[in-house]
Image (tube, rainbow, N blue to C red; front, side, top):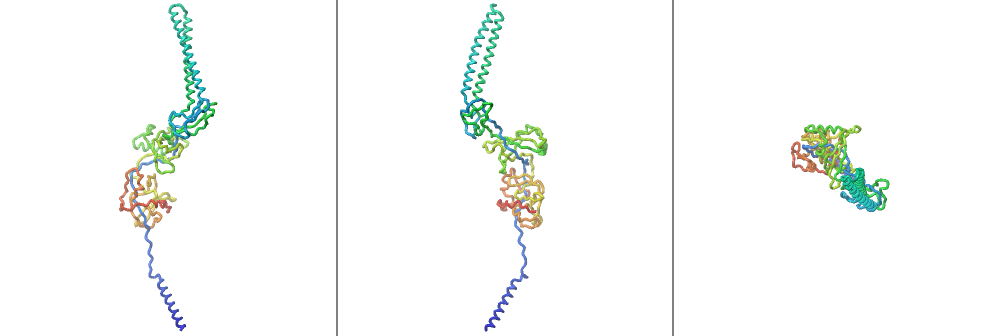
Length: 420
């Protein structure tokens, strides 16, 4: 019995193994290729673009003056708070004034004495003049009286000048702000003796509204500006500078919120650097800018009527330069080398290498490998990408799916792919 049961069990196990091996046979299965990756594509935009020179400059105070003590004396008062803005003619320091008040009184007394002497001299001259008419005095006496009167008049002028000088020195004991501005921390304390061996620096006042912006323009850029003006029928002149606008932005931002106009251009190119020194002036009423900042400067130099723009995050770079991925025949991915221009918000101007009817891959760039096929979804560039455009924007060719969903800005981190 046990032998028969054992043989039956072995037969059952062999049967199960045979069925399992037949089930594992892959002769009836076929390989199914994975579907092509999905990407989003969009046509480049066409718009009128203002071309700019983008430069680096630095801000400078329009006025910056050292406040100095011009007379000798003790500092009696400091009449402002360090770092606070002040108005013109605000008293900043008070210097010991009693000595200079006494000098004014002395000069006034000297003037009064000179005036009294002049009255006596004038009376004597008039008396001698009358006696001369009566033939009872000599011409010598008349001339002597006239000389004494002239000397008295000169003494009055000297006394008046001394009095004016004494008043000026007295005025210097009140150190006033020469213009509206912000005063730095004081450099002397109350009780300090100043002006002993010459002017003593007390503080510095800086005017920060408006501000100067200094930058350098290269020689090729200067020539390009002249060419652009020549195309418009104009000749560059120094008097045209206030009509040329410019914009500046801070180093940690991408926009250009501060606007001004050019104020000065050097009459000659610096032969050692090949650059032309240029200065602009910009309003700073909110005091958002400080003197000495490095800023990004852009100056308009012309217009391009039909510029092509794509999303800046759709542009990749490799050893050959900048490129974009486009969809070619049979939905195959192609790589096009392009020459990029200036940035317009979230868009970038493509100067060459791209056609108006090229469908550019804007999302899913990491899955779009040149030569491979993809499943493209046509969309229009989202409004967020064109929000900063300065002119009316329209696709170069209408999208076939204008109602397609907007692109996801959160995926922009994948844009700068280094696909060869």
